[in-house]
Length: 129
Image 1 (cartoon, rainbow, N blue to C red):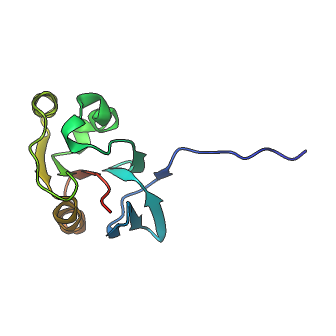
Image 2 (image 1 turned 135 degrees about the vertical axis):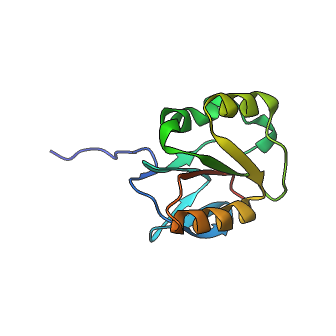
């Protein structure tokens, strides 16, 4: 019996540096993903947010579930540096996660350095064209 097409959630089960970004997506671990990504200790996940000004604590539920393994969160806010929304800053502070918003390009570069240093880092990257 032939099974139909199975669509799985975008997930890479491990930590990996980001090799490239742009054109609306990212390359990592010899794979590519179109859209935003969330990089956590448990793996790299496809992530829905596209508007940095509309980020909410619920967008980070996976992160909060792993808060004990994360000290710093890098947030790639697209092409420009933008301030994190107040509600999100409050939720991250309550979870004892230091958040650093920056452009996506700067966040990718910083993430790769901290990952190479084996730091307790997570990242949320909004895709850029």
